[in-house]
Length: 628
Image (cartoon, rainbow, N blue to C red; front, top):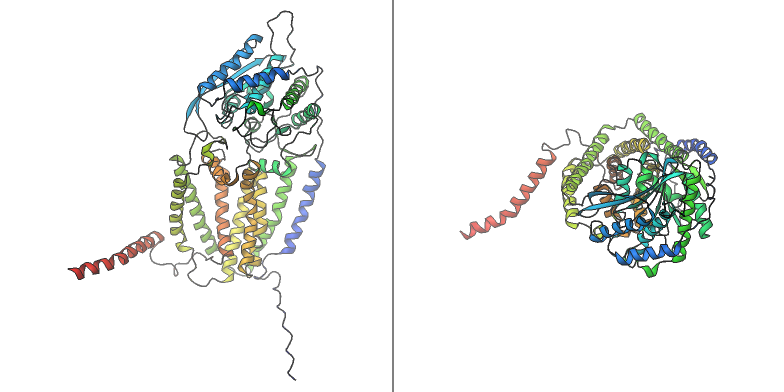
């Protein structure tokens, strides 16, 4: 009888605190206890803001006249592209509609380049002011222009027509038998130009108007007769939110007039808008400058498509309800003793609001476990005598490369390879948004590849790399990412939403470094979900699809995305690249003087090119010698 086989020996698990298990999971979990206090504090800050009371006078919004004005503007001037003859005629038409009611108008004219195009055109804002008892000003606005792809009946002839109907109610009639509506606040009726092209008219007004310091609230009317549900747009061009009283009052008036709960971005969508401020509506420039502003619309995160935007597709019932809601909102704001409280930051959860500073505390608290574990990882390496200097030099080389990438991109941008214009988001419906500049992108890629060939000369493995050296590279990269995260906290804590998934996932790369390559790559790819939120938001929420990466490049190229977060992103990319090299098994510490060749990377590259050319020419020279 054959002897029985000995039982298989169980593989012993590495000891905690060893180089095989360098991350202290116990310390990491314990650090999460500090998050309980910010979470508890955030729970106590949840409030239900009360809306302003309804106006004393019932709504007298004339939906029939508004629909007639919409048809007239959309059919008589279907092409209202900024700078065109149709745009000039539409501005004259707007002034003519107010002339019989004695409401004086002022036209602000200027020239500016349109975002996403190479055209510099003449733009016109038409402003009508109804003076009130108080110099505090309420602005009601709508843009006249369209993209030219359709008559722009819903976007935004409906908003312009509703603006005219609201203005007539506050105009001083010419008839002595009629009395003007007594207004407690000064009300400005603003018809902007280039609203479909980055909201240039709104930016012009908020930066050049002499009375902008007295503005207490802004209501923008856009696409009021669509088939979608009523919606309130909140996002600004900076991480701020409109006053909660303004939003609550608008939601209450919409519910009363339409019977539907006004929609707005959800909890995650609002966090994304605070972490990556972006809006295609004209309330954005006002919110960014501390002025409470909202947009009333029946469209989504993105204005409706211009193609097919004809009069016969309008919903008259929706136009009537939204117009009455806008009139009621204006009345509530006008009679309210305290219209708004400026802009801070807040997130709506149903009918309740969570203060932005409390969310910031929670996000910063979620950063603490990573920082504690990364510092402990550094201390562990020091206790075991792990050399960090070569890893730090390797990270320096990667930082230099990504800085080079930023400089090259800036040079391409200055040469006009990615378009130009003002620092405003281009209209996604424009052809230029979906037309990727293939040659420019290939040229940029070629220069970056050439730069990487030079940079990688001292970053490729030349010998077997010890596990301690890989751990040093990961430790340095994680500490660098911690510094980047702290800089993000100092500028916009909401942007931690895109950073925290990467930090908490990549922290465990040293723990799985001795495992199989698929496991390491899976952990690394998991951390990319955080930065991917920005692209996913542009692709899904704003309907950009596969054009989202190119649109993001455009936002950076025109300067809509400030330079500071771009610098932070490049620095984070350097740390991520070092972690990716370790996860792929291609990391190598910076070589010391004995391991480096006598020639530098540039000289080595030139030598390699020369030797390749000589090798290619040698057979030809031999053939010539034989022939002679």
